[in-house]
Length: 319
Image (cartoon, rainbow, N blue to C red; front, side, top):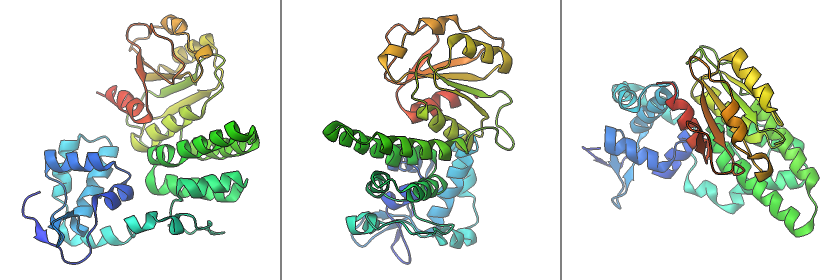
């Protein structure tokens, strides 16, 4: 942004702002470069910093983008926000780099989290899972989902914790009970955030299912919860081991805007049955995810490789 001021009063680095909003730092830099919505201060050392007014505008832009407004229009609207409302932007404290020190991250979770309970680190959440501390895992996941959203929680907490559990299993052969408990708590937290939002952004739902014989269904719920909470789309999850015929029947019954099919294991990734899915009018976009899919997807079927890519592909169907 132009018109940068010397630092005075509270200001924040891009990392702290990114964690506050649940928006990647590269996205914040893009918003600044393209739309002029970025830091307006410089520290004594010449580093660019966000003040309370900048934060207010970014929070408003982020809210509008999540509601479906194009980024350029959201930025224009956010830049028109009243400066006197900036004080509300600092009501909740930002996490700073100091918060990432191990001594802080490794504090045991409190027994009764308040409404602004901070999200745990992946290390803290993994320790709670290894101890089979169901309450701490539940509280940590809920705090992260409420404070940072589904995508952040999935990428920054869930996947690292699963990786830690997998390493433990590979090293000792034990830990199945840990994986089961953590999976169940995560599934419960995500499933509560799926379904039909108030005022759906589109009248047709998004249908999600695992490939036939595929039992790994957590990625479905992560995507469904993200679509419901960020794009206001209604989601219907059929779950694991969905027979091809049952998926086709559900498509005919619901007329979904898009269909997402997950394959984790190569044994479940034969793409041939996708070609037999019904051709609906209006058409349903077919998207697949997961490492199990073989080459040779039918024409018109898109393979995505991350949660964010899947959200983008589904979002593109909104027109």
